[in-house]
Length: 260
Figure 1 (cartoon, one colour):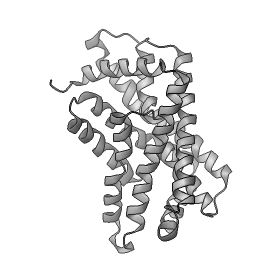
Figure 2 (cartoon, one colour):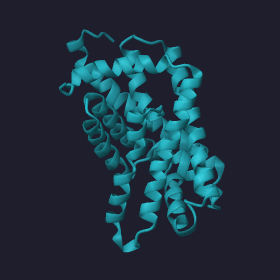
Figure 3 (spheres, helix red, strand yellow):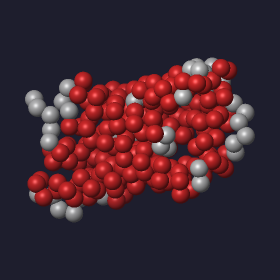
């Protein structure tokens, strides 16, 4: 079976969006919890890799760390999971195609966001703090990453969030267009690796690394964490819903007979 062309990916994305909003609260919560965990484990791997390398390795260390992070999205899209940043594109496309209601859209985003938060907190507390995997030898890196996130003002965090989810949702889009596991993994890997390498902000990754730093004793307040969540969430929503979902929908809807 051959891979899909862009207009076919659009149709597949619409169907994915419809299926997502039909999930029960329990199903969305469980899969959302896994989604938050998988992204956090990917970022934990990044921290462990980069934090354990010599400082003079500079960008090479970041490149190697960025290369391990995409395993989180691979686990979600192939193994099963719900991630709010991907749903920001997928569910929006289903709504633009008039296949779901506004209430279904909002319900999906709310449940998945909260479940992702719980999953990220789980990894940050138990693996990061209790086991100590974000502390000890890599504590300096954990804190410096988290401080860099909260140091960005609202506008810069929002724009960074746009760039991040533009790439994440391109990874989702390319995954839907491939039929083989190897094709899906390659489609996911490179866009996601690029957003980490550039340093864009991902709301679920931040749900992990900022609390991990706070629990490790960083001089970061929960209010700063909350403000970062608002700005990055909005940026991620724009990047995924507008720059990927809406753009491709309006570009290819005519070929599928879809009307906005």
